[in-house]
Amino acid sequence: MLTSTSTSLFALIAALVLQACLWQVPAASGLPGCARDLEREAQGRGISVELFEDLEELTRLVDISYCVGSSGLYKPFRCLSHCSEFGGFELITTWNTGPLLSDSCGYIALSHPPFAKRIIVAFRGTYSITNAIVDLAIMPQAYVPYPPVDDGEPSAQNSCLNCTVHAGFLKSWNDSRTIVLPAVLDARAQYPDYDIVLVGHSLGGAVAALAGLEMHLRGLNPRVTTFGEPRIGNRALEHFIDTVFNLTGSESRPGPDTNQTTIPFRRVSHINDPVPLLPLEEWGYEMHAGEIYISKPALPPSVSDLEHCDGDTDPHCISGTDNLHERRLQLWTALLQTDDDDEGIFRRHPPVAAAEETQMQRIFSRAKSDDIEQSLSLIPVRFRLWELLFAHRDYFWRLGLCVPGGDPGSWRWF
Image 1 (spheres, one colour):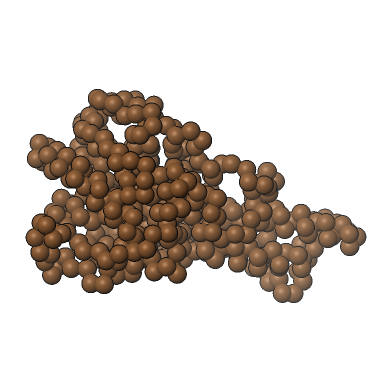
Image 2: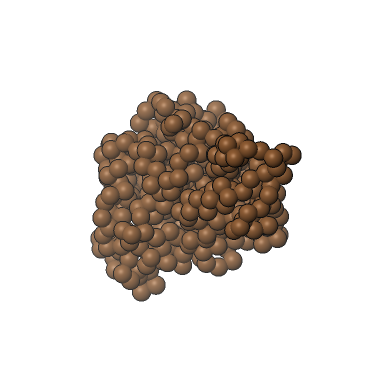
């Protein structure tokens, strides 16, 4: 048997390894990766290959928006990012209203055959420290859906009772809509068979959501995809979004025999991205439905790493990461009350149950020692404010090829 000193040392090292591996265990799930894949398939939560490819392409398209206001995006469709991969694209216009809180930035382009026929509107996120802090601190204001006062009276069907919205996000959309809407309407008139596709990353996802909401109420029927979209309003507004885009019905999670790429609103979140958890619930903000969750921390994800989520706050998805630190502490405590014999076999001590013992054995078999350094923090995802300073998290591939510094998630903080 090991000495008490050796046992204590082993327990300490084991706890660190456990903490490292728990970064790889999806939120609110005690299942190892293979079992979680089976659970997704059995529950119909998995996404199709076609949807995965669609989302992957959209991450590259939204990354191009980071060239606007930095290295530049030029006609016909040239930039330092992924533009060369989209030879059939035609740039319509770009916009950049400035560096302040209410400003917006992005581009509008036509996707011609052999690509899918689309009018693409891409909203850039922020990589400004000031914007990231101020954006998340703005108080909400009343939300009045389209048509606004200057366009006519809203119908009863479009009323949003007691709805409030993040004032900064709404002002950002209002400041850019005078550029975006005329360009989109002109493009639709010229290409009536082209779909309207909106995509936004991080704080730009909030603007894309509000733009998509207005365009939908205008009868344009856009398809909206956001990556790392923050909460944009209160529960009444999120319920309104769910209703408008039918996110509580079958359209939000089609069956295996249907075309999942036609889902009207895809809100993609990532296990290590704190932005979707902000602004805080305590400030009166809520999430809307339509979430697709990436449970793999490292890049790139595979089809099996993505899943459809149920409702507005599925505990198996990004909402569950708020409680992840509590689960780490519970398993850590259990492990410290467990030692092994000379052959490395776990010996259970109360209150460690058989299921917990089995999970710890699985955890150790999957753990990687080079992940220990980045696993030391027990801070909940939404309180990792050093990441919020940049508000820039990679999805599928490294984003921000036109932005110096890249994704802070790959940096070492300890």
